Length: 47
Image (cartoon, rainbow, N blue to C red; front, side, top):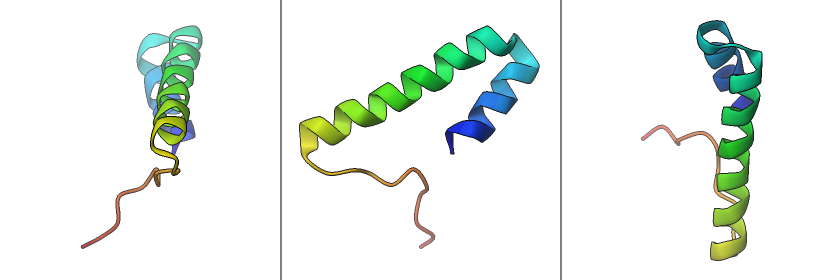
């Protein structure tokens, strides 16, 4: 889920900016996991 975002940003803005953006997204998910005590799914469930 982070890889498609990386590829999309890398095409538009460049590889280095895409790395930072993907890293920030991953770090945000880790933060929420530690804060809430549960790991959230990267994909949204179909309803």
